[in-house]
Image (cartoon, rainbow, N blue to C red; front, side):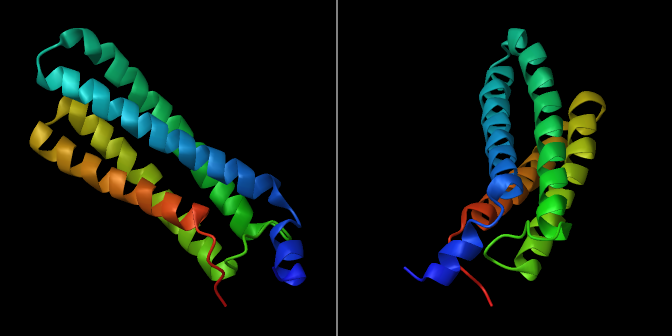
Length: 141
């Protein structure tokens, strides 16, 4: 193990740890949404408040994820081992996930499910992409 890489990786792990926790929370909220959506498809309407609550949890988690990603990207010394370009990409993907979540949820309440479900798939792809980026051990640059 290269001591320079280890020192760089451990210089300020607080914001990176927060980002990883937030991404994990976003993934957990998405899993919850899948489970409750499956119940709704089988006409178990008791799951509706659970699905609705999960949407709020997902908005909160993705908001914290976005905030942490921006802090990792912009704060001096808070960067990930991937470097500033990597951190900027994580922040951009987190921003997209946060923004897509709102019309996706609104279409679930007020719009056609034919639009709600594809946007949910896009949201899942964005959150999984951010998880891959955040938990990647690969060093760039």
